[in-house]
Length: 347
Image (cartoon, rainbow, N blue to C red; front, side):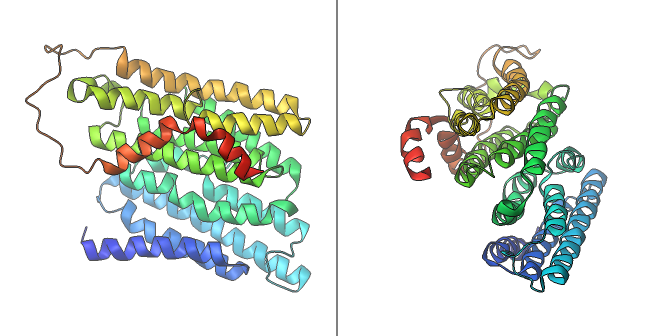
């Protein structure tokens, strides 16, 4: 892609998200979401592959549906309350808005587009879709959280963590596994939103770092299927070791960074006298952990059918930049010791 075109598209992505962040008016927020959607579509379809075009079309249709629902809900709210301000919400409009925003970020049961779309994209565009594209809708959800029905938030959160865990179990494609991982993490963020929004932000920040590390690792090793994971160790044993740890961090295993938000969210749910929901969430996290362990097993404990049983020294060095990967991997593995500082900031 032409670098000037790429710069314009990435700037538009940034502009759309910033516009939504800064707005307290529903029309402006809707405009920001639309700019966001229109900016990523050329990035998704840039390879002109039938699978990429299909994924782009599916993404466009779901996002357009979500945007239309947001506009309709905003108009309904303005009709009932007499103003477009986000701080003055009516009950029917709030439920409709939450449904539309859940469709936009891929919360269950509006998640069906997410694995299909992510499977058709290259890894870097998939990374943008899994991280950056979640920011604007989540900002709107956080802004209207106090007016949303608590039962709806709990139902969406629980369903997303369970679907994200069950859905990834029998997948062989890594991008689909990461899509279900994304759905499960969104569920963790939504479930705690009504009690402690700062924990939602913490879970989002750690999720972005861990997912970025996972996608950049797969990009560096050019891997998209479980079957090719077994061959990565002969290219780069150190990368294979850190990848296994990043995947365990995504699963929320101590002593890695991913354990921190899950631990705090479970603690908050217990504090709110919701032990049953906290138990269900912890069991759903075990489902997700199973498929991450499957990937770790394929990477580190199986040897691919090959004649060489040692690191191949004649491989050409990669020309890809490794700085972002090393930064995100370090964050994804080593931030658990700063939990007391995070707790102090959160409270």
